[in-house]
Length: 144
Image: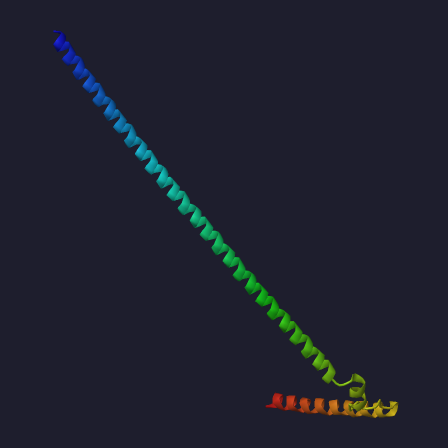
């Protein structure tokens, strides 16, 4: 019976050893899985960081382009302003002196009182004649 018990104890020990080995194996597998997961997480983090860095770089490049365009626009506006000012200055230089224009213009001298009266009479007579002619035309239209 002692032999049987020893055998039994031996088997039990073997089973315990096998169980311990399988538990150790499971623990190692779990550790490996955890390590793989950590590696994957790190890779994902690195990729995200790279993406962020890439986006920031693109934004900076965009800002540089925008600033450059704004600078070019400002330069162009300044050039146009300068051209406008130069053209205005040139026009002012080329424009005749207003005093000269008045001297040289054909402004008729002021009519004397008598001349004004005559001109007024002539204009009045002209208007009366026109009215008479229109009246005759209207009378002619009515008789027809």
